[in-house]
Amino acid sequence: MTELAEKETHLRRLVAGLAGVAVAYSGGVDSTFLLAVCRQVLGAERVLALTAHSVLVPEAERRRAVEVARRLGVRHKVVEIDVLANPDIAANRADRCYHCKLDVFAQLHAVGQAEGLAVLVHGANVDDQGDYRPGMEAAEALGVRAPLLEAGLTKADVRVLSRQMGLDTWDLPSMACLASRVPYDTPLTPEALARVDAAESFLRERLGLGQLRVRDHFPSARIEVPEDRVEALARPGVREEIVSHLEGLGYQYVTLDLRGFRSGSLNEALGQ
Image 1 (cartoon, rainbow, N blue to C red):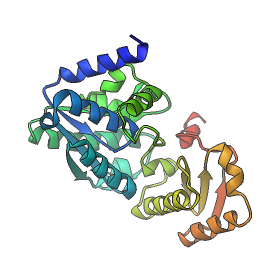
Image 2 (tube, one colour):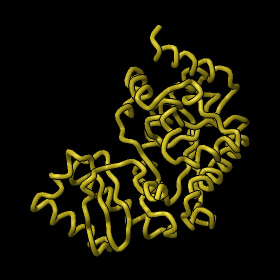
Image 3 (spheres, one colour):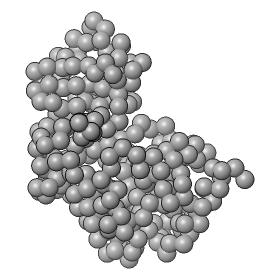
């Protein structure tokens, strides 16, 4: 048996040991794979997918989560959460993610318990132990299980196994909440989050970009795309179209980060 097969077997044994689960489900690579495994191992009647939706989540991601859960044949609830009502989240300090996950997981857990499901699981994997991830601490504080992490699965492992299972989410780019586009200590507002969502949606649809970020240093926008796409965005015609569209969203200055896309790039300031 290969190492990856051993990890998958371990994962399925972990899931089998649970009487039933509520899955914190975003529709991304990890949570979709975890949901599919729970569905296979436990059966549809013992699994509930819970999607937290708020101003921090692009609308396109919510729609995808609904559609993928439907195709998997899993019960699914979208839980609307007013995250900005929590001042510890709206202030957008360096520990924002801790307070956000604490709030969101607590509300999802309550929904799951009301459905008779005592265990809430989420899709964190081994790679999520890197970078600055205070949200992981919140999950641990509330007893939210991370079966992929417990089984030793990396992001690359999850993509391979997702493809083997026929999940079309296997090659989705990594996702992150819209708050990750706003520098720490800049308060979060519905207007700023909607502005970022609109800018990124335009770039994806117009240029076919998968992985990108628009960092909101309002009134400036800093665009991050993979290094091999930087030149394409700087071409005459394309450049003018991007500037025009983002100015229409309220930005006065539109910049292209020559270092390219970097997951969690705003965390770099924490090291300083």
